[in-house]
Image 1 (tube, rainbow, N blue to C red):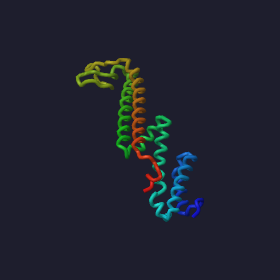
Image 2: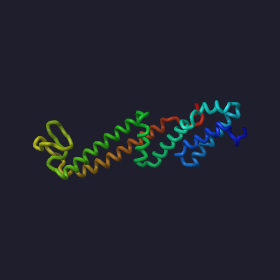
Image 3: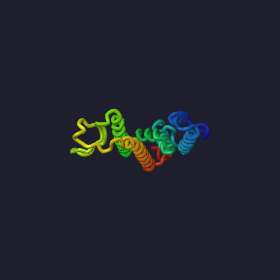
Length: 198
């Protein structure tokens, strides 16, 4: 077998790997496939049968997942766009406790901001029953049935509070997502040919 012509099994495996890496831009994808092809060639030239070499690497689709995962993580952290960050953390929430905790914290912050904004919106239509209240049960924000049972604390200051809560929630969620993704990226083993092959 010459270096330019791998066995049919290896050529087919490399084609499937290239298809599995379609989400990665062409130059990077070609570099990954070429490096893996060289590694496969070295193993077969050392006397291993192509089927045995490929068995160590597993299915090309599974082998490609680590490269795709690394590419998505670096892309999300590089772009810093909220949608990319959220998509990257959501894809990891089912197998990472840190990602799940980040999603839960982001949802709680978003829910809190939503309650403040919803209360402020309701205050436009019914200023008597909506606001931040202090009563026997403590503090709460929202709508009250009998305003005589509690004292409204903010009045029309609820509108700037709603705007501020949106901004602060957005910033806090971004910080949580970036921090969680950086930690996930730092803690995951580097993707190498030897490490990825079984």
